[in-house]
Image (cartoon, rainbow, N blue to C red; front, side):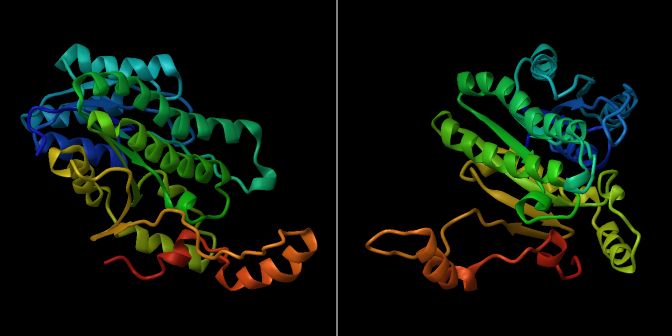
Length: 301
């Protein structure tokens, strides 16, 4: 499905990114495997993970080059895209997968913990997408696939930084889709459920938490890869601005915010009439304070 295309996958040294890169290569793509080789919290760095995936692709007969530039700064993100151009002469798709975690309850979260996660996830998705956009526009084609999360789309404990970034990515993707559709450029999101280093940081202090993690272990990163390959391919030409989730063998189309209830008062509103009329009328339609695990409450199939 990707024969002749050049694809960049960020955070491709392990987990979901690795499986996406391997699947892209199996379907004919020439790959830029980007990963700084850092720890889960973003500390450190090594060329090893990216190089290892490159060697796996080459051993299977594919074409790939490593990139160890960070997505979190504009100049280094631009070098990731330049790597594709220098080695393969073009770029056709980007998968924005790179990420870190610094989980903390909001009232305990430091500025550094907030900033680091936003920089890698949200700024990273913007920087790499923006670097690719110039080339996509010129060639009037291109596909962006962004990893979002139900932590942002729905909610989760202790992840205000991660959730804000991931919901921001969904909005970024939609804006890109609207702005660049006239150039035949597509932008879509995947919210993956898969056991990886990032999921491995979920607390397992209680029986409920341990049961949840046991379920997630069933969902391998390889299950996410087919949708990413499809969205990067020409077969997805009519799919733009959408959000999907992948949960083991389930693919879901995720809703996007729309009005669910409206109240009109011809004379206008006062704080008092809002309290007496508007809020009681809308309360039955309020969204509960649910987490991702509450909404996706059934066992993965």
